[in-house]
Amino acid sequence: MNIHEYQAKSILQEYGVKVPVGYVAETADEAVEAAKRLNEETGTNFWVVKAQIHAGGRGKGGGVKVAKSLEEVKTLSEQIIGMQLVTPQTGPEGKKVNKVMIQQDVYYPGESEIKEYYISVLLNRATGKNMIMYSTEGGMDIEEVAEKTPELIFHEEIDPAVGIQGFQARRIAFNLGTSGKSFKEMVKFVTALYNAYVGIDSEMFEINPVFKTSDDQVMAVDAKVGLDDNALYRHKDIAAMRDVSEEDPTEVEAGESGLNYVKLDGNVGCMVNGAGLAMATMDMIKLSGGDPANFLDVGGGANATTVEAGFRIILKDPNVKAILINVFGGIVRCDRVANGVVEAYKNIGDIQVPIIVRLQGTNAEEGAKIIDESGLKVVSAITLSEAADRVKEALA
Image (cartoon, rainbow, N blue to C red; front, side, top):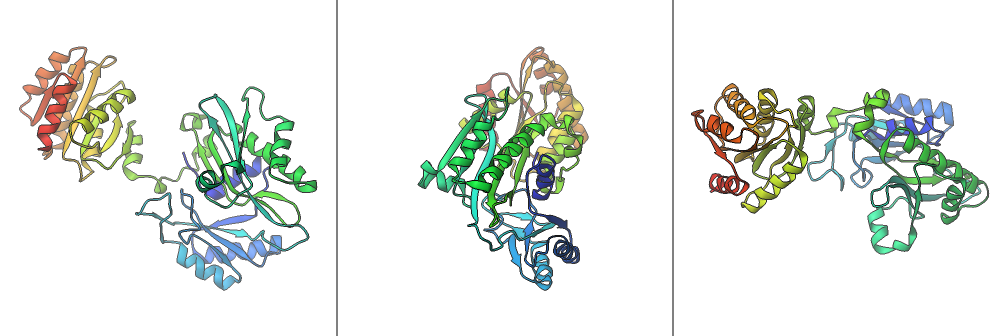
């Protein structure tokens, strides 16, 4: 699950990570009130207006602006709230901005040089250890840094059994070139950041930039946080931060029906029980000359209700020209799935696209017989090759 920047920063603060003061606003008037409050609390006369969407690269799309007066705060907020923000991570369709964060400006002059860094925390699946990836080149796309100057990217692997050690945090601060007060602040920052990552069962923390102010404070100016859905039951407060308006409506609906669904760009809808079989089914669709329109795993307890929900979700995609149901009868019997398909088909009514049902496993023959004798426009198949042929015929 992804959360907004302002939500991520509130979590980071709880673990002792310094962040600029900021408040969220859903209207331009609320943004002005937030700016006034920041002026009273911090003395700032400049404000950063930041679009809140689940995507990075907001500045490149015009979603991050600096305001030098309350009038500019209002004008910029009016421009950003409601806009369809397109960034390198949203795709060409972009995302609608429903709220902004008004944040104090921390790029103030002082005795020390300001500096931006990049720090992320994630799991290295190859080693089974957590990893802090960091660079002196903050504020830039890390992919660009990796391509052009890979020597400026450092890694620190951390054994999750013992957690981050003092010498590791100091090594990171040293490699980033900090010294004196900023060195001590960076050690505290890195340690708190890693503890936050572990504490909320995160999949990924990306702080870009980590900012060293002119008075040697170290803080997270931006924050991108992804959480492990499987651990949300331990974090009810964080689960409540979910913003479904930022997610694909069809995927949200599928989740409410207990289905694992991911929309793709193809023309063949697929409904399968089991993630591994779903991946194999998508490969088979490609080999038959089609393109999968989705990943849809109905799980091991497929019945008429889940099959009907799957049908309705797949049929919302206008690009779907055929539907392939591929079920292995292990936990669930094939005849039960077949009855579910027939019942769901009748409940939905007139379905215009051809449906191929491949059943294999327990009671596969009985299931195929139910499909064949249903009188519906549904074609049964037993083998994968036979199902591929039926898909090819449907797309011809």
